[in-house]
Amino acid sequence: MTPERFDNQFATAHCELLTECEVLDLYGYNTARQCEAENTAHESECDEFSKQDAMDCIGEVESMTCVDLASDTVPKACERACSP
Image (cartoon, rainbow, N blue to C red; front, side):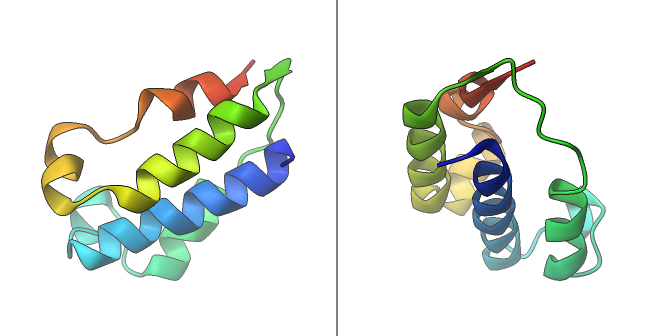
């Protein structure tokens, strides 16, 4: 997995969760497409990229429920995946 692929997969998983939980508008998005575009719009400049943390992040986001979203928006593995 590359940093760019991680960004794309994270945006897809995150926006699907927001859509399923019907909270896109609460996060400032009108559509899932807008959510994905805005979550992949930044450049992925990683001084240190952890492939394992990236894969863990995607898995954790994909397994999140709406209840999880209310209490913890981004799994810690996501923060560790790409260090500037």
